[in-house]
Length: 347
Image (cartoon, rainbow, N blue to C red; front, side, top):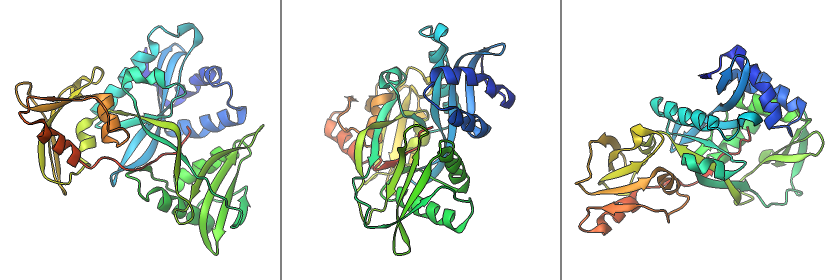
């Protein structure tokens, strides 16, 4: 039976979690089940008290072009060994995506262990890993192995992080004190610590480290005043779950009125034509009846994702029934795509 687990049922997923993610330490697993499962949703295929397959949806507040959404970060996607390659995970993922559409959630996201697993579900890469190549040795460093939430120091760190992640980024995870408290517990679950670098009284860099057997850098955020953010390997994949809701946040350099056909084989309600009326300070997005006799631009949902998130301009799309195709291209080009994504979460 496929269902979202009740609070008391979530612990039933722990054996499958340990089987699938055996590299995680016992300390981290205990932290995860004590903290993350307080707020997350778990969709599972469950029989009695046995979990055949599961997906965890961890909630984060994400700012999208200035509007804050509660979005789900998909993690802990796993199927018991004896049920693999039997369609269990497909049924769960399909349901998650359809449910998000009914909830008017613009998109969901993940960091894939294997991108090929998610491509058939129309996830697309939209960002690379954030990297800073900077020598911080000249700055005053303090090593923190315990920071009290709500303290002056915690508020100062949080203010620095939010200020930096919001700079030049249209999409970023917004961090409040609750987020920071949980992050500290996550770091300390594996004997981690924080480095704070200052220039005078001002914080200019933040680092977190963790690891019981081998200490590893978990996150680094550096002030744009001393270092330029660089980009590593492909990192974040997105799956759009409500085209209209997402596009309602966009604006264009000039007034446009264009029909976009989205091909979506999973979320049937957005396998549709959308009329996009947009300008510098407005956006009206609505589904319209079959418009195949009219002029429209056609995208598969994964191509549309990579394109609208500003990650790849060279995607496949069809310009249909336009006498002058340059008119369609000009309208598409005028839409201000997403510029800058700052999502660093790991679980």
